[in-house]
Length: 129
Length: 304
Image (cartoon, rainbow over all chains, first blue to last red; front, top):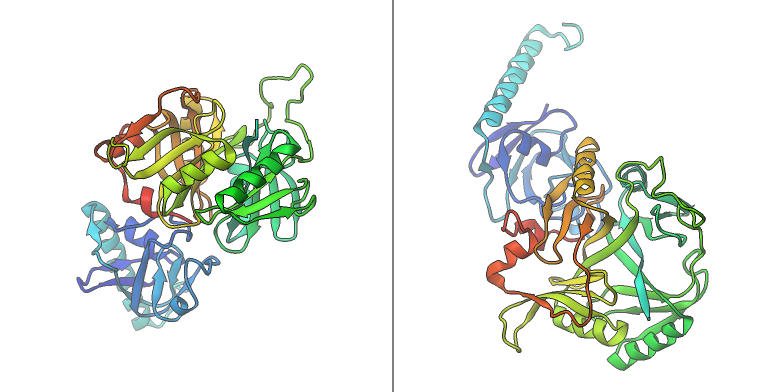
């Protein structure tokens, strides 16, 4: 249950498992410049400052170059975080366009964190509860 | 007659299984051949072997095929392309499955064009003898045919001159910086028939694909297509709306690799003697999207 933190403003967005960064941000009420949303146009690239992610589809070499595969470039429409990650947008900031969606996401994150805390304390797994 | 139509669009896709689901099950194209990393499709009202070729690996355009009426047209176009300063190579029957001899060249916009006269005839899905109006069991949108494409080029004016000189196309509409005779051409919509455009060229990077479009009959079919895109989680770029330019009705959407597709209905009849429509920058939003009257940033920046 990874989170995406946005540098430098510090917003934290909770993602469902297997969810892409782009999908998670939009579902949480945020908007930024995106294009095809299917890995083809390269418009939604950001920089990943910390954490790990992987791509859930093959990404064309014309979209992510060899150098960009190791320099932290993150194609957000195909990137699924493997750990909590921190990203920084290129030349813009995310815009909160829907406070209601943001509130829902915040509550989902709080529930997940509370659940994780309980699980850690009791030493039981999610399945056992 | 020379060039009759855009015969095939050959594009790259990152994932063939997802692409096949989109082009066959959402758009309703008929698979005619699958060979190696390529899959070939035709639409129900097309008769030649294929109009769409998908190639696995990457994204964006590989090439276009243009079908000419007579085999002698190939020689004529070769001469004209060479006279324009373009290097032309010959291609042989079988270089493309089910496509005959022809020529291949790279345009001044860095797109690869092939020109051919022969393609294996399969026939439409309704046949020619007392044909019904449409096939009873269409899948998804059930597009009848490939219609046109929009590409980008650093100098659309050069491509306008190239298509005029080599293909005998004429411009039906243009976007220009001003109405002055020395204005820069920002975009041009070109054809050589009554079809409102066969190829449009927009200012942008060389060699890029903006979209390729499938034909639909009317507004209600465009709306139904958009409904199906929602059912199939196809990202809609814009629409349903109308273009001021061409007056066509449209939905722009993306295939699973991010190549932009369009379904396009309507558009008025083009004639070479019809005075050309000219749009200037202050009305560009209305020209492209007649209802929102705003050019979204994706329209000019999202290319494959």
